[in-house]
Every structure is written in structure tokens, then in C-alpha cells.
Image (cartoon, rainbow, N blue to C red; front, top):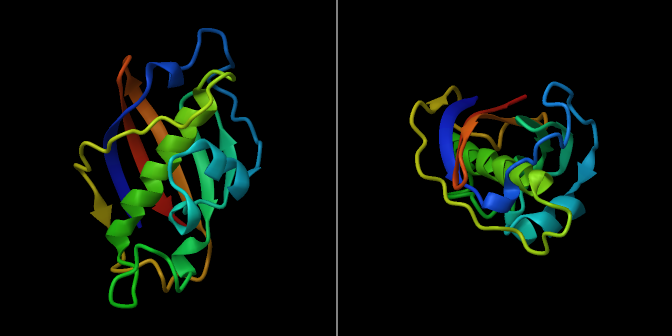
Length: 155
């Protein structure tokens, strides 16, 4: 559906600490929507992800069903365009940052999506997809204040 490479600014506190976990092993945690809403700035119906299926220091895999919701706040003229998948990917990156943040972090840190170069849309809209969306984000590189992710939103 959507493939993109997107840099996003992160808090220095959201960077992984040395030895925190094996970068090659995905942690299958199945964190739910309530956990996600407590850890990212997006609230109410703007918190689009339903759950985290798996994650590690470099990547995250999430599921979402909100693309089918009639009250999805990203809908325009009764439809949810495929470009809205960029917001789903951005939220997966935010959840990933929250998962890597120190345990004593009290508030979600706001990040900014700087670029969506290389985005490819393979469908015109998301709201007519009956399956849940699988939202994946993989960190390509990171520094103290920035990270570059490759993202995929599909079924």
C-alpha cells in the first residue's frame, strides 16, 4: 500500500541504551490501544493504532483497524485516502520511540515528520480495505535528535 522512508526527530531519551536488548530478537508484546494512547501524544480517535504485535531496537510491527471507522478524523469527503497511511506510519515510529524510552519517562515526546521522500501509494484509499492494516517501521539510522525510518503500511 504505502512504502516510505521518513526521518523523524526523537528525544535523546528515546534512544536505546547499550545492552538494553538483543537487536536481532523481536519482542512479541501485543501491547494494546490503551497502552499506545498513554505513550504517544495522539489521543482520542486520533490514536490510530490498535496494538503492537512485535518490536525490537530497530523495528516495530503494529496493527490498526481504524481505517474502516466512519468517524476516523483523517477522513475527507467520506473517504480515507491512501496518503493517510503516512500518519499510521508516523504513529508507529512514535510508539517505537516510547518503547525505547527509559522506564522513568513520564510524558510522550513530540516528534516531527520531516520528509516522506520515496513514498509509493499502491491503492487510492484505505477505508475500503476490509483487513486490518499492518504498520511496520524500521529504523535505518539514528543520532541523538533524529532517526531515519523505512515504513510499510499494508495488509
